[in-house]
Length: 209
Ligand SMILES: [Zn+2]
Image 1 (cartoon, rainbow, N blue to C red):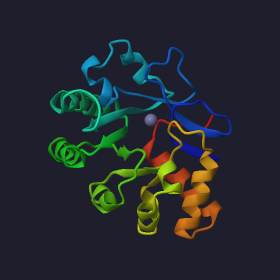
Image 2: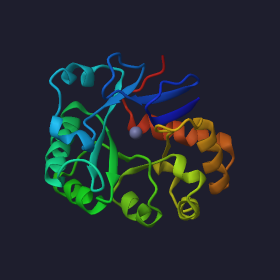
Image 3: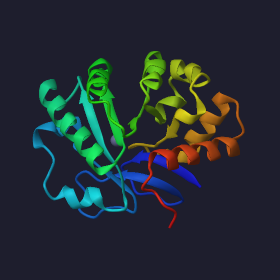
């Protein structure tokens, strides 16, 4: 069984956490959060129940984006509110972070959350060690197919910090698994087992069936 940490499209054949922000009907497994681009909207009241449902595995995507979205201070307020909610509900957070790692790390160091944060769509090879040292999981997606610097750094990434995702691409999750297995030079079945273990450890609400 393959595990897709973050996608916007419901797919067959793998366990996938679908980002349900804006969806009317919730998928089999989903995450729900206020994307930093939508920070001014705040957390809708009707989400309270949806976040507590057994099929809600994570909060997010949530985070900070310096390239797009409203004023950074507003984004920070919205993000911090969601960090408190994730702690209260025992939900890990799917993190969206663009050119704001220092700010995100500062918030993490102040709030010292117990819940795991998953840096989704990770692409910044030069930050990988800092992000792992700070205790975040790395969710690898499309960038690993083309980003040479990231490809070089993957050999270093500890196996227990890896998750994989397809995000909004049409790629199959299998393609990401294959690429990571090749770059880390480990057999595919071993990688599959490791990612399954990681997924279960992080998304504690996930249960078979
Ligand atoms: Zn996404």
